[in-house]
Amino acid sequence: MNEFVDRFCDVGPGCMETVKALWDAWNVWCAFTGEEPGLRKHFAEYLDDSGFKEPSVKTAQAVRTGIRLKHNAYNLMGNSYV
Image 1 (cartoon, one colour):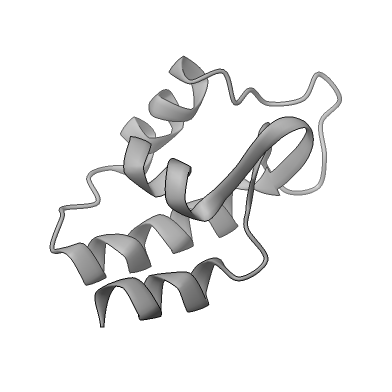
Image 2 (cartoon, one colour):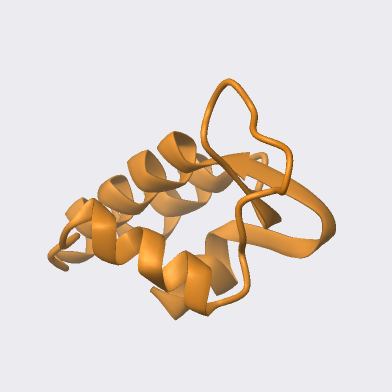
């Protein structure tokens, strides 16, 4: 998962992304690379362990702070693996 984050995500204090968007992008990346995506629970544990926490104030959708998809993440995936 580290390569996925390094290549397709921005990380930092001002970043925030929905868990759904991160999970969906992770699955697309796995399809391109042939990697097994694993369970969503393990993906959430990775996010926790990497410091991408849920905000203290609950939102309508589950989000993680400190991470967001690059605006062109899906284009980067296609150019890298197709």
